[in-house]
Image: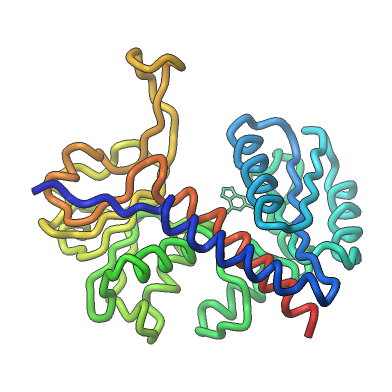
Length: 294
Ligand code: GUN
């Protein structure tokens, strides 16, 4: 029997409704959660994501600001923009869309954002809190969304083998940190595979929960997946498709059609992890505003 779909879109919808209710609750106190999204340059994929983030914010009743800067923006100009957002009381969350143009040092930008406004969870203070299991910080949106999606779909994680493919700072590394915590929605035995892993299939075949975040279309094939596994696909890229009016379709890191035959649960692309990332961004921004109100 083919795997059931893990419906990220539906779970994200529920979270967004919960966030909207939280936003409405703050209104009588004169607080409106505000998110600033900064986009440097004109990368088309980033522009699509940034637009979706702004729209989701407004739909939840939040204050949303999108700052678009030219591709040749200097480090100093971006720093000044961040300083101004750090000081703005109407802004509770700041997100600088990655990747950044070459002349800008991303790690320095991340460190410049106040940890209390770092709703991306990329600042070393928040990364450290996540690693030690301190729930006071912000957790990066994509891994947080995956954990919530597993939880709300009734997937048991404790004692299970979780294999993460990819070691990026945005997804792979924080995913590992989350799933190994001594907590009911984690407590996995975690393995991480990456570009230097000698025999990836040997590891992925042991996975009860397989999380593919390598950015390589179709990397995970049927023979790399244990029958009955839960498969989460973080990848999203355009591939040519003559049958589609646009000439392309979106595809993930998992060879969906063949892996669906062996997995028990699988996320689609699109409509799986992507909507959860946006929902968690809203959730983090609401938390930032609630905290500021204490
Ligand atoms: N680029 C791809 N994913 C993300 C994300 O979660 N946050 C930011 N800031 N940039 C990204």
